[in-house]
Length: 128
Image (cartoon, rainbow, N blue to C red; front, side):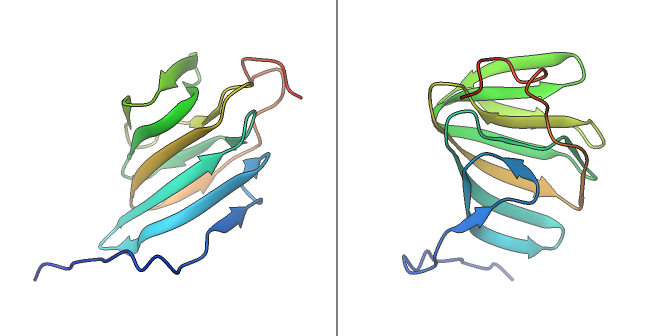
């Protein structure tokens, strides 16, 4: 059966602090259902996730602003309109650039394992 998830316009955003650095807010679009979760994430400048992996991979679409996605090979700049696929088990992070916010829609497949924070030395830009 098909499920329609309607935006109610009344659900409050969640401030996320335990697995992110900086000011980050999340709106859940689809709570984990059949191994799939979907959220909109709002990053203030310099804000970012901790390093993490996804059991089944992750798809990101950059909705607004600019930021970075990075794996062990280093960061890549991303802007509104970019879509990023991270394969299962690849350690990575993502977040806003030093001088602009970023909003992305995230579709995560199965579980996520969180690792250490991204250090200021690993982050590609001045940290305020």
